[in-house]
Amino acid sequence: MSLRMLWRKSVNALMLSLTGLCALVAVSVLFFILGYLLYHGGKDVNWDFFTKLPKPVGETGGGMANAIVGSGKLLLLAALFGVPVGLLGGVYLAEFGGRTVPFVVRYTADLLNGVPSIVIGIFAYAVVVMPVHHFSTVAGGFALGVMMIPIVLRSTEEFLHAVPPALREGAMALGASKWRTISSVVVPAASRGILTAALLALARVAGETAPLLFTAFGNRFWSPGWGQPIASLPVMIFTYAVGPYEDWHRQAWAAGLVLLGLVLITNIVVRTLLSRGTSPQRS
Amino acid sequence: MASAPTIAGTAGLPWGPRALIRRARSGDEIARLITLVFALVVVVLTVMLVEQLWVNSAEARHHFGLAFLFTRTWDPVFSQFGALPFVYGTLVTSALGLLVAVPLGLGAAIFLAELAPRRLSDNLTFLIDLLAAVPSVIYGLLGVFILVPLMRTEIQPALKRTLGFTPLFQGPAYGIGLLTAGLVLAVMIVPFIISVSREVLLAVPGDQREAALALGATRWEATWKAVVPYARTGIMGSIFLALARALGETMAVTMVIGNNPRISASLFAPGYSIAAVLANEFSEATGNLYLSALVELGLVLFLLTFVLNGLARLLILLTTSRGSVHT
Image (tube, rainbow over all chains, first blue to last red; front, top):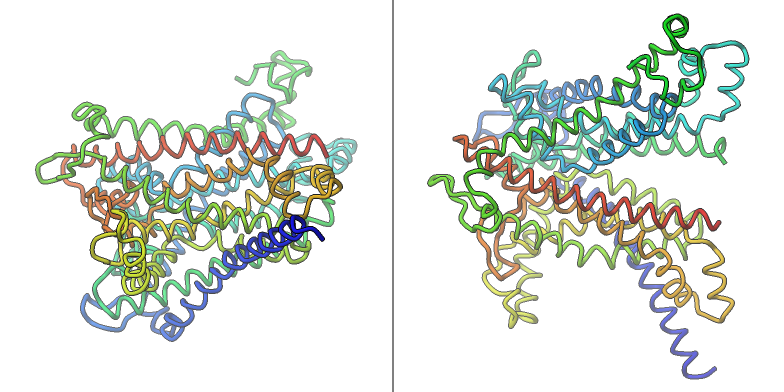
């Protein structure tokens, strides 16, 4: 073997192992994150954390019950706003669309998807908070809902396109109107995909902090109704992590673990279901 | 609107009042209109977003003009608002992030697309997708409590010993600062570079690879000289996409950048970014000019990411469509 060949072979081996190392480093970050959160937050995820209100500043103990309920309320509003708009809009794109309107809608949906979340926060502040002059649950839910729309819209369209045309034709041949075909054949056939897409979108906005800072704001107590500032897990993590108290840091870790756990479990379950449910049909 | 015969879905159908009523009764026309309204909500929201950013930043735009972008002073007390420190911090941290994330992400993408067996590649990609789902406040949390102390006690002193002669690595090691923010950003954008680059690499037609191998190229040579150049535009697209995310990233950066609106040559120095100042000051802004200056910062951020995302999508579209034509 010539020296040149030897050199080329060693470059080959070196670069190939380097790419493997890159992949290893990238993936190991996930385990670092999980490991640190379990180590620092694991012992503080207890009954108090889920059932108690935050203690007054300076006292130790207490929990984040209000933030957990708050996150739930915000996500409920976000889903009520984001899912119908995304779903029906996606039905239009996939089933009724011509050329121009779907192009414009797709383009703006992608644009909206790329807008930094803090800018979405400014938008929600301008249209929901400014007119009434106070932070509210509705404003936070609106901001998160706006973020959900493009995700649900594009994946609904994609899953509807994946429904075999034979199903549509079969229904039409039986004399069903187009709407009847869509509502009782096409959408049910894609329902699993659409549901998982909606859940993924929900998991994504569940961790969003920036758009909530000046819409839902935060609250150290329960927030009755929908018109008042409300606590949420991500904002609590932020406030507690940058705060000066040791006890806050402890709870920030615990909240981080709970939030990450929820987001990751949703992702794992949904993605596993999705890969089992759709790929054999499509290929 | 309802009588417009040019919409493709209804083109060719009989129209006129009676036919319309008949179609409406079957529900199709109503369904089409209802779903159209929901689809248009997306457009309306986006237009409103731009309009709100524009209108609410009017006062600052008139007051400071273009100088807003090039002025260094940010002093709410005296109503002096210049965006330069934030623009600087945003660009520097994003550039640092890319500097670390591009080689790492590209390397990993090459491994996943070209070398790893299918099963392994799929499983690793699954983990990378999970990594992309980790909320940014979690990265911030780890940044504050794990990376910042590590930077202060280990990494920054080491950099100072070895590279301290350059102005970039001088000054006290606070732990927080531009460098730390850049590193956190790098970790956050790597998953995006990997998953998009992997897709693009997988779309490269197989003959490209096989031709190089048949000419006697080693595996690495085939990848680096035949496959990667083919996918170049798409990879650039993935980098732009990642850059757009880095520019707009808020929480993790806010928590580690140091929040100090000053421009200093050292990467150790605390800085500030556009998104971070919005996160910290927006809800406390007093006075219309202050608020409008902040909204203008949001407008700047929006325009930056808008341009980058557009470019990225165009580039990715160019490569993936070219690849699929060939296969």
